[in-house]
Length: 373
Image 1 (tube, rainbow, N blue to C red):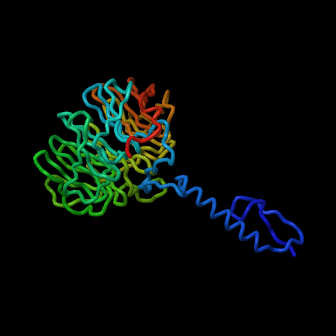
Image 2 (cartoon, helix red, strand yellow; image 1 turned 90 degrees about the horizontal axis):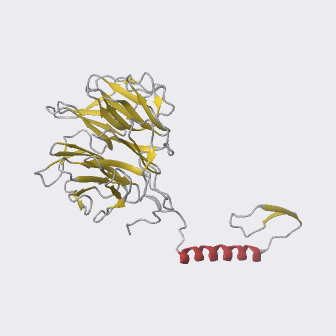
């Protein structure tokens, strides 16, 4: 009779070893059970996790690591003036720099969710933060204190914020909401995007609002209209499949509209979204995380670095010198000509149109635990 026995009790940790003529023993089974029970008890008493508790993964956004990163993943950036920069991290809240990223300090008083997905700055310097689980927060004192601003919101996952004059638009898990300076609560921007996750927003010079969604592609709402309209003609990836998951939208000075997708590259529309054409076939990565359309060219952030085109996507040039972390999460340009890139490991800045990058994570490094308890 042949039986199998592990070098260790039967807890899935040892390799089976074949032995000849060994009869089964009830005592061995009892001992194995006691050993496993003892192990589980020790883990529970010690506080060690039996399974990692993480926020759910949402639409391509990775959950935080079970152990804090040395440098946090930066999901959002915004600039006030020419020197003050705010960075929103996934797990450690908001950081502020007053020297163009030279040094950083956490500014989280009143912010109840450390998972910051978007930031936006109003003309008066007020900063708004959209979070993963707790809605919108506003700071009117440079980040020293934050206050929740959620009246009227149905879902509190805020993926994007867009400020136009005195009006704030929020892309949420339940469509698009609007808040003006005189209103006390958010109101939904018509119907048609109910229960739809909106990742990104853009606004045309004529007031037309565009929304990039999960599942419905690009949607358009005219200022004189009464409903959202889907814009999908030509929005097809290289395999012939419809691109319904839009991560980022941007507009150039000619009112050309760009759509960056989760895994289908970049598309451009020159007629307000009526028709689209792919412009990123030459890019080595189709996961688009950020788009900056300026007079200097078209800059695109991907999962493999940053690329630039000066002919609407016919040719692309890699701009990764000094960019030691190629997993870029957000890309912005400032009025002073600088580019800032938030990555999975901190922030980088370029002062020469992306030709060279320097890491600017002093104060972000060495964070060993979250300030949120």
